[in-house]
Length: 107
Image 1 (cartoon, helix red, strand yellow):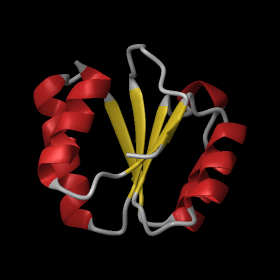
Image 2 (cartoon, helix red, strand yellow):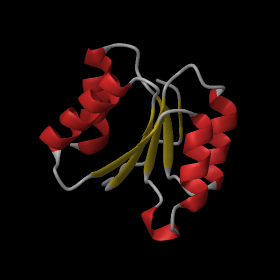
Image 3 (tube, helix red, strand yellow):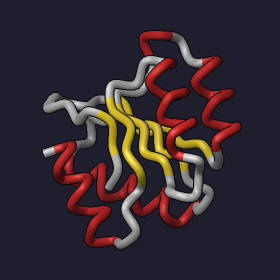
């Protein structure tokens, strides 16, 4: 799991960038099992993510952005950080790793 500076804080807003709608639904289900107070938004690709971040009011910007790994991660990490995300990570490649990542950040 690649990342930029992992904070130890309570995340309340997450942006998941993934073109697989099933994976987005699974992620949201796992997230809601852990904490129903976390708001999740999603984007289907990097361009949609950038448009979403550009139009998002500052108070609604995500604390954590999770990118699926086929993006040119370095460029999107930089874009997310410039937009104010506290942490940006790549999406894990297995469901078990996905669950472990979610528990790491949200428990």
